[in-house]
Each structure stands twice: as C-alpha cells, then as structure tokens.
Image (cartoon, rainbow, N blue to C red; front, top):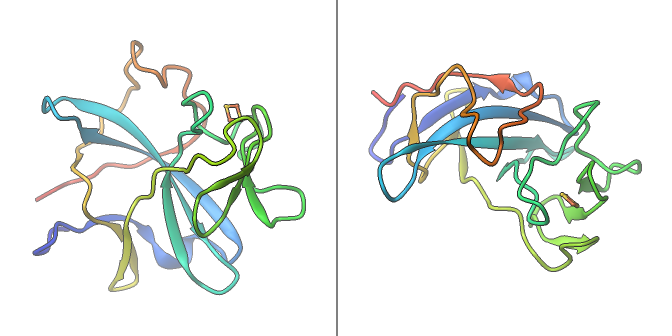
Length: 151
Ligand code: FES
C-alpha cells in the first residue's frame, strides 16, 4: 500500500492480541541504497495502542526475542531482551535496567489505516526470502516473514 506518506502494510490490526506482540522480518534501504535486514517488533498494548520498534537490542545489536519468541518481562510490564535481560519501557523504548541502561530501541512509526497496521517514514523494500548470511542478523530466528510491496 502506498499513500502520500508511503504507508507500508505490516499486518492486520486484529492479528496481534491486546497485550501481545509480533515480530516481522523486513528489509530497508541504507544510505547507499542497499537492502539490509530490518527486523521489527509491533506491540499492541492493553489500551489498544500500537507501538513499533526495530527488533534490535541496543546492547549487542541482536533481536530481543530468543527461544520462545517472548518479548515481555515475567510481569508483562516491560519489554525484555532474552539474551542479557535488558528491560525496556514499552511506550518509550527506553532501557530502564540492564547492560544498555539509558539506551533506546529504535522506534518504527506506525499508523492504523483501514484496519491494518502500517509503517511509515522508513525506506522499506521488498524482502528477500533468505537472510543475508553476512549481515549482523545472520542467526535469524523464527520471526514471521512478510513481503513489502512499495507500489
Ligand atoms: S543483547 Fe540484549 S541485553 Fe544483551
């Protein structure tokens, strides 16, 4: 989907339950025009607010969820990195405790349009079906693969 501000449909808004989160493997263009993996995370809060972040922990630059695909702390009050336990405020993305305390998750601007969660303001490109073995994210886990069609 494309609009005046280049909306990119990520998923159906109802596809993420309240209080839940989902990850997606996208690609975006870097400054050199190259397509690079861009894993993202979308959270739907209990209050029905959708929040998006790059699924990249500021500590080691790897995605937050490992193993069980869980994004939240046990009490569900924070996002939590499964590697070394950094905790992030859900609405701001700021790390409140852990090895990257004070750092922030990279926000992904989201908008709801016709019942779909859309990203905007990011140069997304059509995704490659296979992760780049030479990228920082070569050990991809079981995130959902989706295709982005900019036109
Ligand atoms: S990689 Fe996330 S806390 Fe270390």
